[in-house]
Image (tube, rainbow over all chains, first blue to last red; front, side, top):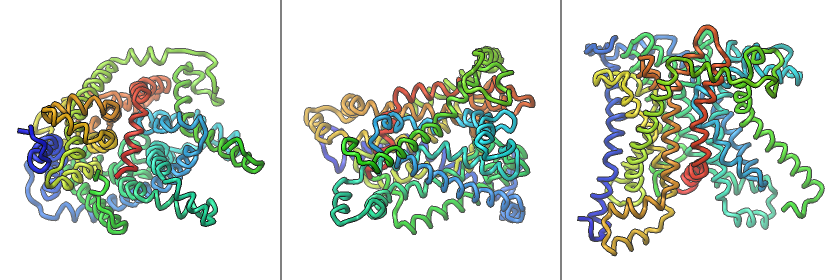
Length: 301
Length: 281
């Protein structure tokens, strides 16, 4: 059947057959649950196994009128902006350093990803230990350096918990950004720098007119994926603060988890999920319109 | 470059080296800290002034950890889920990646966009419906449910990782084999697969690490104490009233070791795949 090389016909069936298992798998584990989630948000399912009755927009009205949704969204907004800002800064900083021609750097170019590949629980234990108010090495070092006068219980205080979580999550994710930025930096054609130098550009100008434009595709991918993935982070928050203290780190995923799997208000959790999804989808659409780039562009060969 | 350095260049160079050391410390110090802490006896561990090199070296925490009754189950569960996820998803990703990056058919752009975009679907959105589906199928407390969702979580990025490796093989190689009368499947598995072995390795390590690390779904689906995976099991040590820091530290180190070893073996091609995926469109 596939004996003759005919890209138009046999190749097509062959290609579709190859992608089919993965496609079906994703449709069953993502497509169907999404549909079910929307359906659930219009029913009043309280317990597992319950059939539920159609209640129209009742769940949506209840959820929107509940202050905890808005509290969680505010926290999530703060969480996303803080993370994206810090990760981008750290990622850029690291990429520029690792782009230097120093021998010991090549080792680091691979191993910088280490924080990213670790189980979150390891990360949680690590940072809880280092940030501890009583035995924490961070407090000890900061006191030695004279930055602080008395130990701070970072994860246990209302003002410090969120910034501490943002720092920890950024520490985990900035290496990912670094690797992508580094790749883009190294693929900038050398001639462009030379041409800029001939035109009399100083290093700052060549950064803005040569480097940055070449980083744009990667930045666009990061600009969409970064906020999306950050918004959805649950395990870091849950393992380190469980949304506390006093709901200081109570983000939307924590709210969904608590409603769904602590209170078992499944329809309510589904409703919040759908609202969050619509919000994220709108974000993506706006972002894509702003950057005039379609998602398919980075799936292209 | 270093041969023609002027005075001011030396200063710039020195600043760069300092920044590099700073980066090293930010990334690697936490690992060092948790490793040395896991070997300190408890009284040294909770001293107000920390020791940067352990005064007394002990493996008591590791012994204690192995004595925790559920630990072997956690380990077993994580290994089973990790291996099954890796085998299944690597296979699906190879087929799918080959299809997307080597075949032409109508609707390919839509399909490949869907595959990649599914990476961005909120995982928290999936928790409630998936819980209901698996409860209906009787898959709660069944490791299979974790394999099912883990494959979904890793495949999109896995396909993306393969792109760079697949596009490094010239099409002429495949066309020549086809002219020689080899079947398409044979070309895929006997010609292309060995050529992109590093890429397959990179995908496999990514799948295993993600599965090993996954917390949210394992926490929701595995209610039975002896069905929990390592991250969820170890996390229970944190929430206990009396935190045994030594035990936690030993648990963290042992949980981190498999990903680190795998990364040492395949990390370079993994990063290469990520890198190429980011620059080539």
